[in-house]
Length: 414
Image: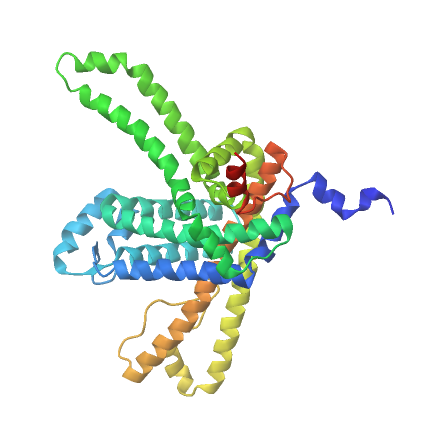
């Protein structure tokens, strides 16, 4: 058999097939446990913060967010109408419910492939970004605190997953769960600071422009100062835009950089920006392959979860009498678009309420594992993408990953 037919030659010539290893890595029990732990901690933090209910709702449970995505005028009228009526809910639950509704709407539109479906998906994604905008615009302190918590949890759990994937992808090593978490805790400052560094840079340039704007208020002199400093203002704008583009394109590479290089946050920012601007099309191609592959693997995983839930529900139906009346009060039939119904039926007996809560906890745990898989896949795929970009840009072998002791050894030599 000729050497040209050796499958290994295909992987050497084309690096992107390595991305297809992400599913097997992401579904590994250790990574799933770490990812599920992160999802659980973020959920508990959000529920705890929702004790201070600040989101205005009406008697039909429509929220101010539902009005904000329509128009700012509708939001203002809604808040003025229902603010004094006492209907309130939390920001976290509002965002979760809104996000779930938008995601279910996207799944529903994908049934009918066509131009209208594409526009519907784009519209729902746009509403998701507007939801984040609403949270930071009208609930700033809540959003900043929640973002800080999410980033801290991601630094520990995401850093651990990236380190596990880096060692497994490069050297076929499979570190333990505790060992990986210990690594991310030791490098917590780097993982936590990497995404914040570009924000600090943009804020610094923005503060410079802000100060010049304040000087512009000086009578007679201010306008001249602004005119003279206009080249500096435009230069600061260019630098801010470069940082923003680098962050948008390279944010997913920051954690993998630290995991592979055992580095500080500044190297993570440097490498991610460098790869974005040096090979943007290749990075876009790798990311596109990962997105398509991730969507397919998610659909398969979701179908598996849906089949499991539906099978269990159908056999439960055989055991319940009275046309499954009690079963419907305990558990609504799952659908592929909606695996779980958030609301509980009213007028239940105490024992039925307890039973429904226990059933819902079990279902939410399964759905939490599905979310954990998505998180694990994102970190796994991005870590592989970083290794491929490092190979293309810096010609560093795919099997190269820095040991946690190498930095100390180099310092001793110096």
